[in-house]
Length: 95
Image 1 (cartoon, helix red, strand yellow):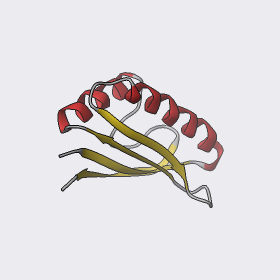
Image 2: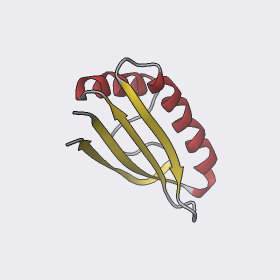
Image 3: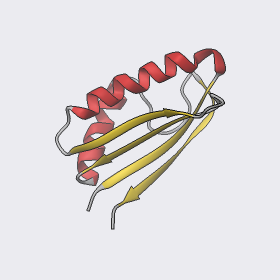
Image 4: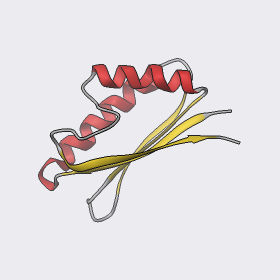
C-alpha cells in the first residue's frame, strides 16, 4: 500500500515563479529519499494555484522525506511568506 499527497498552494502572483522553483528543489530532494515513488509540480492554467503531488512506498517514507523538506524551509502545513492563503493538503492511501 502506497502513501501519497495532493497539495494545493496559493502563491502571490509576484512570487509564482519563485514558489515553483522552491517546489522543484524540494521535489528533487524527495527523489533521493528511500521509499520515493513519484513527485510532480503543476501550475493551474490561470496561475492561481500550484499543485504538488507525491507518492511514497509507506507513510514512514513520506514522513522522512517531509522532514527533509521542512529542513529546507518548506512547511508542509500552514502558510509561507510567498503564499496568500493557507495551502490545502490531502493525504492518500492506495487500495
